[in-house]
Image (cartoon, rainbow, N blue to C red; front, side, top):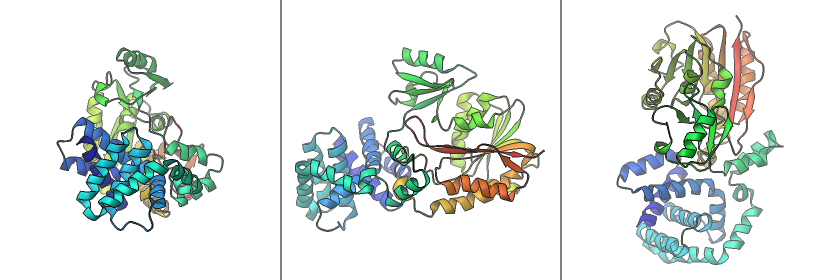
Length: 419
């Protein structure tokens, strides 16, 4: 029953994303509706749901090659896509996958049962030919919409192939070591003692060979380590908090960067976020790390009257909303949910936010403009426009971190305000 239920629920997530819902929300909704899922069922659901979004281009292409006309039943189509993922990208027993999928299709639309059985058995017979046909279609070959490919080829002509390859990788589990309590070397010793293989990425960063449950990480509950992508860890390094500074972390949730700032210096941090539920995660994270000097505020950063007391900050971390185009491997549904004009839309939202945050920064202070995007409209172009609007602003070396096997994609620009 485990595979059948996981397959059915994963198909529900495919339908939800096709309807415009993000995958994480769809999974949370489904798990809330099925609280009795076993650990095995949850694991299978996670794998199929994320795998289908990761390889949706090739899965849809192979299915289309076996159809005379497009399916008019989304639920049946989603069940077939989930089954094709299991047959092509996992080691599940083919006969079991087919049988469970056919039974699920029968419940969704009885008239489709023989059709589903024929399609899946045909795939098993023609798998090599169907897989080879993906190489002749870019969306199927790279598992990206055509407009994404065109964008990456135009803006990153030397790197686009590496980027799309990184998009298909499973994200590594990377730890940030609390520098107040240890370093990469001491962390590796603790991990080795627990039988967890890992390697150092830097003085305070460690990447696990294989992901493990957070609860099994030595020292996690005591604040010795935090789970944070290596690219995201660069924010605190670039900001360089100093002792005694007042720092604003705007758009702070879930608090990874907030905690990292406090690990680097004894400073006063205000963690601001518009979402009360997500802000609680910031508070929980800071409590785990043992920091009491940070205050959390729920408000829209653009509405100064709702949260600003008039005392300027020495530094501001502006980790502003974006398309999240740099973290596709963690959120593969982003590839299919985004539209070509989304970057321009979010850039307009960013502009208002950055202009507002600039007003709460003291003369001589610095603002770190950060995104997890690789779209230039949200990054370099946004920075250029900001510098044109603000004569008292300067930025020496903005950094674009492209997705690689060890990190997600980010953009950082440290903007200084004239004294």
